[in-house]
Length: 134
Length: 272
Ligand code: SF4
Ligand code: SF4
Image (cartoon, protein in one colour):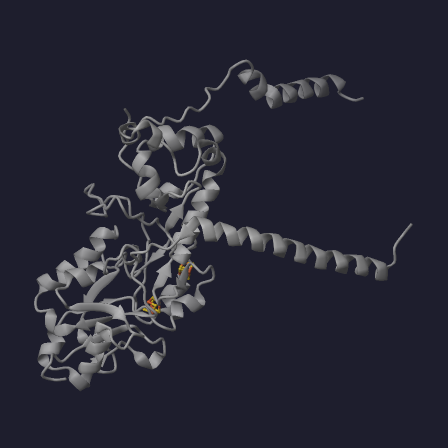
């Protein structure tokens, strides 16, 4: 092999650079997202009423699907009342229903979205509520 | 073992048929019960076969009447004011007779008519040119005749602006949430219940669909003190039809065939 020394050194540098991020972050845990549910609006509700439109587990996994369905239904079909699994009715509106309780976009939406590095474009048009925490 | 072409096509054909049948049945069921059990229209919502407007020019006497009507719309829909005609975004505005009704200048253009501020906004045409050209169906016609915008879909190609013969559409050349040189926001009254738009989309009057859904009349109608009347053009007993039946009305450029749904009473009652 010609220039074996140079090649090996080159490889070593390449390997070092390519794996740097892994070694650099090794052993460091990034804080897990912790969305907050303690806005004044939610705390005001009686304990048994502190429920989202659907159960927590469903919302956690499916809120993006639910919101997409709401959007299409409201904008395109003018059908805007949501009947949840308990038969309760809600006005399908991100700005006027979801965010009325979750008046803490930064500590609620952004908390996980930033962690996952997703950037939903909802807020390019929809107006986020005034940030409230309790 | 190899299969020949004939066998391959047979297998492919059969699996396609099975496949289509299979998903159609499953989707049909799923879709059906989702829609039936989970979403319903607002019971208070106003409905019609074809919404339309009648603008009674005798009710627009002063500049204040016009301003009030424009503000009633622009304030609740977060319409930005960029302060220059080139970037202007408007849902409802005023213009004079010869620009609103080109080609009909001589017929009724009395001195009084010439000076009048005509309220103009999207005609919610029965055969809207804008809808035909939109490549993404961002602008579409609802069953009740409202020509609606789905801002989530608009790609800003501006075909609709080229197609609309009435200039009813505006493009956001700038970020409507921005501020001018003096730090003043372009949206003077931010209504927290309605979204804004972004740079790069087209917007126009949407017939106050969000108010209709709650059983309310469009904002301009409420603010106009009877100057703008709203109702079902297909219903012979509606107020709009009665007004059209009693008065001489004209529409903007009917010769183009888009069938505008705004009727203008231009003569006041004596001229009817
Ligand atoms: S007035 Fe223009 S924007 Fe409105 S429906 Fe007719 S063609 Fe479309
Ligand atoms: S600008 Fe938007 S609404 Fe107009 S034709 Fe293009 S996609 Fe459709």
